[in-house]
Amino acid sequence: MMLLAKAALGLGGTIVLAGAYTMREGVIRVDVDEFRSGGSHVHMWVPAAAVPMAMHLVPDKHWRHASEQAREAIPILHAIVKELKKYPDADFVEVMDHDQHVRIRTHDGKLQIDVDAPDEKVHVLCPLSTIEDVTIQLEEHGPAA
Amino acid sequence: MSDRYRTLFAKTALITTTALLLSPLGAFAQATAAPASSSQSTTSASKDRWLHVRVISSDAKGETVRVNVPLELAEKVLPAIHQDRIHDGKVKIDNAHMNDVDLRALVDAIRTTKDGEFVTVQSNDCDVRVAKQNNHLIVHVLDKQNSKKSEVEVKVPMKVIDALFSAGKDELDLVAALHALSAQGDTELVSVKDHENTVRVWLDSKNVTD
Image (cartoon, rainbow over all chains, first blue to last red; front, top):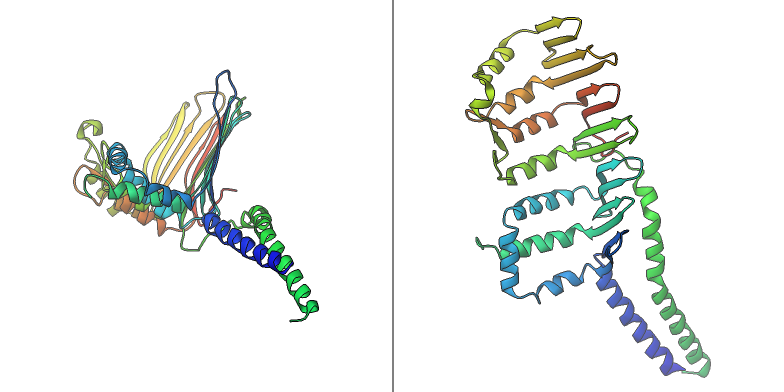
């Protein structure tokens, strides 16, 4: 029983530490449902801490290509994200009518985009720090870098 | 170590492990309960100034648009935009679109003039009033053409107009205007009311609309 307890304690501690490390920056959540024939249904749940690790595995040529494509948007995106981090809980845009609802806000340091329409539902939740990490990587791989 | 203590230690270790494994669930539960309390906060740090736009349509679709923008965010983001006529937080104005009106001279004239009414038009169709009052430029239009009246009121602080025209010739300095706007107290800038739509643009320190 003693051995079992020690093993359980070790395993439990490892799982908790690994879980805490993986979840320390929250999760990226993407839910897309298109209510039409052939419409896509995407449901993704990724630990945000995995993104910086995964970025190291992306080949440089892909970074350069993405950076070139997003050249004009990167400084704007970087400035927006940097400023949004100062407003971790705020509603920025809300559009409603009798059957549609669009909302862009920050909640708990995450950018949240919700679209509820009769023909589609889109819900995106992404930590601002993750978006900033990606924009920094794109800037570093840009032509000026 | 006696058997009694060994058993006690083993039990303690098992309970600790179970508690450790269950603790993230507790944290998750707290995180999901958090929105109710965080959404209560409507006033951000006092230095933050927010520009709000609200459009409420009373037609069949009943559309409502709410936009809340921190002025500081707009001030920081605008210089990053380099597209068409917008560069470094300034927008180029084309002489061709000004119908040969020297806008800068016009602003200079308004700035140096004492408070008063510059334009007053009263007709069966509409009333128009352009005035300078308490260091604000006020434009008021009342359209009486239709059976359902519409009313537009624009009230801009003179300091904002000065800042807007503080850039070089044929340029409007949007960042300077926003900076000047952020120094103003709570104020309503634009109000449009007609039989179908209500539009309001105003400035305050709250990060949500009412």
